Length: 436
Image (cartoon, rainbow, N blue to C red; front, top):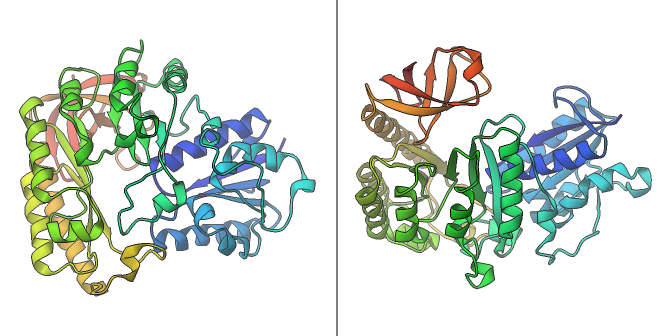
């Protein structure tokens, strides 16, 4: 029996695609082992969102080859799509598999040495075949209590700092029947919560002339027996409609948690980023959500140090963040990504300035996180208990519907169930509670 190991870098979509490859290899008789042990095949699913991501991907490739000289190294993911030639030149890379070829990855590597050429790129599928990416399907999600379900690929926004639309291509929406079937398999395998994900989730259905849309997906899934929670991964602010807000407000299954990328709170920088909203429009949308939903959780992405960002622009980002009351902020320091318009812009911020602004925003983010969590002190929240205990405290842990991590004492037999926890203490990263 051939053994395989997986290393996944990047976003939830990459994690989904690794799971699909994992299941396709298992169906062909491969046995998965930890990447810490010597495997016959290593599948490295790369990320290319920044130049730092590229370097990290290359480091993992070299590390795997150095530790396992006789293994077959297979590189796939966004970096494999964006810069195939660079990866082919790395000594010890056996296969570079592009996105369109991922559905055939198991077949390619299981057919033996006759397919193998040094750093070869196997071109078996038409890259314009919009359906090929959905030959990858999942029925479980290894290492996760919550299952991600990819319903869409591609992006057509072309933010000036982002390479992903060039790598992933245009919007490709999955058929409703396929989404329903996959959700059903996940539910049958014991998953209580499904997280809808995609490269540009809110654009689902755009490629079908709106014959179907995100709301159609949500309405279909919340009716499935056995599904207790549905969560949206990330959605652009200008794609949050009143219909979507009303749907979340009227359902006890849809989590009142919105991850809405802000990127900047300054209109000048937003325009340079090619974002399609103003800071005022962003806040108005949050106000609309507040008017229908009690204590919604807003998490976000913010980029600091974008070219041309002055102190006054950064201060606007701080002010908007405070007004929004984010429960969590994922902070990205700007780094040059070759091939994007932003890489050619002038007035790049000094690295020390970027580090300083990141540190300042991190401090503000911690304060905002604590302020939000304090609203739930001495109140009960529903928590989906993870299947693994917290590594530092050995307490049970899990996430509430508003995406607060909770730690508490309790027995193992409540893992993968939703329980009620009384919140007694809070800090920036999690809350501590008592099982009801």
